Amino acid sequence: DIQMTQSPSSLSASVGDRVTITCRASQNINIYLNWYQQKPGKAPKLLIYGASSLQSGVPSRFSGSGSGTDFTLTISRLQPEDLATYYCQQSYSIPLYTFGQGTKLEIK
Amino acid sequence: QVQLQESGPGLVKPSETLSLTCTVSSGSISRDYWNWIRQPAGKGLEWIGRVYSTTNTNYNPSLKSRVSMSLDTSKNQFSLNLTSVTAADTAMYYCVRSRLNSWGVWIFDSWGQGTRVTVSS
Image 1 (cartoon, each protein chain N blue to C red):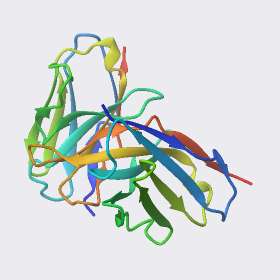
Image 2: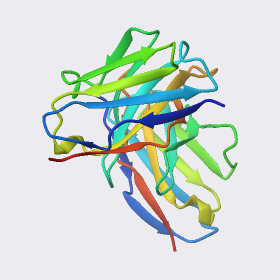
Image 3: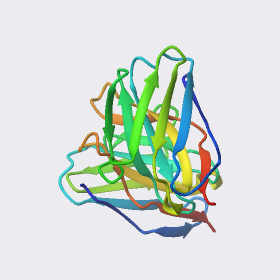
């Protein structure tokens, strides 16, 4: 199985800050990395696919980068509604999809 | 815009079978791939398996011996059965559509709201 490891597990930031979350795969997954946002009490929502492509309707302050084993999700200017837990997910080893453990983002 | 809605008992006794159904609206269930993903309270996401084209299935090896899924195209529904449940199966269960997008990337693009299942006597 491909293991996905996110860091940090949690972070606190202020409105307007630039926030970065990292995800590392246990083996090369090329660009087959997706990011999801899960707001409290809600189902996850797709933000980024293919490591860096923005899903339709997602604000442009979200961006993704990386390839191989190391990936990054960046929020350029944090907004109050970005309070959520963020998950990375590999779609390289199909159909055994695996997720990172999540990064809980709190607003100061 | 496809919509998914889970249904099923919220309480299941240990050693019994957990059975859930997902109803898909505004789309044909004959296409795409239909998944179950679960999330214990306060924890991460675990892919359980997927069903497609009526009879084709793939399961997470960690659950494979206890899981079965099926598709009912006449009702636009798909279902999950998980046998011999224990407290470790207590979780929010989501039904989810996956598809290969135009960029050749598999994505989970439509999620149900989730249904909470507790395993307890």
